[in-house]
Amino acid sequence: MITAVTEGIQVSIEATYQAAFSNPHSHHFVFTYRVTIENKSAHTFQLIRR
Image (tube, rainbow, N blue to C red; front, side, top):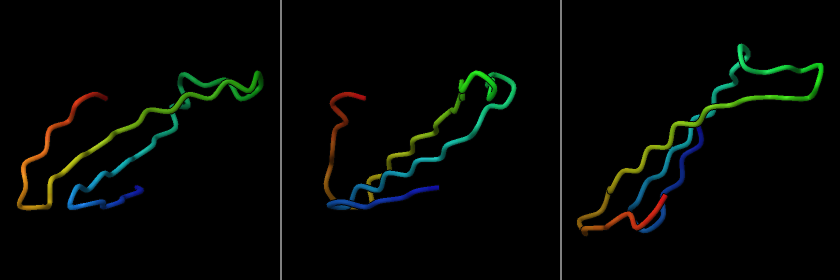
């Protein structure tokens, strides 16, 4: 898991390889991603878009 904090906003990314949907012989690899955003500051923030 990769995590970064900027101005009190913590963003964590977890990537998972999906072997059942991948085909390494044809260089086709599928991953899923989980993105977690946490406000660690005392301020209110709004996520405008993905």
